[in-house]
Length: 335
Image 1 (cartoon, rainbow, N blue to C red):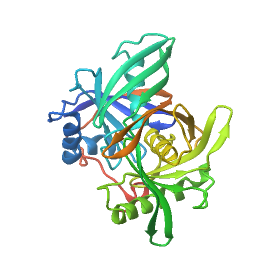
Image 2 (cartoon, rainbow, N blue to C red; image 1 turned 90 degrees about the vertical axis):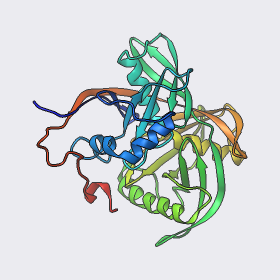
Image 3 (cartoon, rainbow, N blue to C red; image 1 turned 60 degrees about the horizontal axis):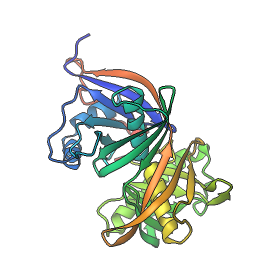
C-alpha cells in the first residue's frame, strides 16, 4: 500500500449517531483558541473534505479532531466536523469523544465514576462518566449555557405558508417546530420527509429571522408526556444538507429545555427524555440558571451512551483522481 497521508480514526456512535474521532495523523490547525482553530478548519476545508466526503465519508458521518487543549482546566479538546458545519458544540459528538478517550485508554478511567473536562470550540464542558468493567457506560455532559430567543415567532416558508416557530440556542442554533402541527408522528418512515422539509424551514429561518447570523438545525418537537421518570418527548433534527440525526441530538435537547423553562413548563432538576426516530434516548435536566447576552439562560446537563465500532486508517493513494472526495445530490441534497 502507498499513501501520501494516513489519518488514524476510532469510530463510534452515540445512540445511533456516528461521531468518529481522529486520534492521529493530523497536526493541530493554527489558532490561539479552539474556536479559532475550528474556524481555520472550516475555511480551509481540506481535512473536512478528506474525511467527510465520499468515498471515506458520507452524509451520515460526523468526525471529531482531537487537539491539545488551550484551557489549563481541560483534559482534552476536540473540533467537531459535521456534514455542512463546523459547530461550537455537539451533544452526540461530545459523548462519542468522551467514550473514545476513556474506552481506548487515551485518558485514564476510574471506576465507578470518571470526571474529565473537555474543551469544545464553544467553551469548556464538564463530563461525568459512569464506568464499569473498562467501559464508559453512560456519559453526562454539562453543556454550554442554553437559552430561548424567540417564542411563537411567525415564519413564512414557501409552499407551507406561515409557521409558528421557536428559536433557541443549545450549544448550536435551532428553529423549532411542532411536529404534530406539521403532520408528523415522528416515526422512522417519516425520516426522508422530515430531512427535506427541515432543511427548507432552516433555510427560510436564515433568510427571514435576521436577529441571528445563522440557524444550523430544525428540531421537529414531539408532544411532551408526563411519566413516572419525568417528562418525555419525541425529537427529530434535520441536519444540512438533508439528513435526520439518528440520536435525539444533545444540543436540541438543551435548546428545548430552555424553551420549556422559558414557558414555565420545566423547572430546575426536572428531567426531560428525548426519543429519536430509531428509539434511542438522551436525558436532560436543568442544573441552574444564568444569563447570556441579556437572555435568561439555563445550565443544562445531557446524558447518553456511546459505543466504539472500529478503528480505521484513512489513506490517500497519490494516483487517486479524487483526492478530496466527491458529493452527489442523491444523498447530499441539492446545492
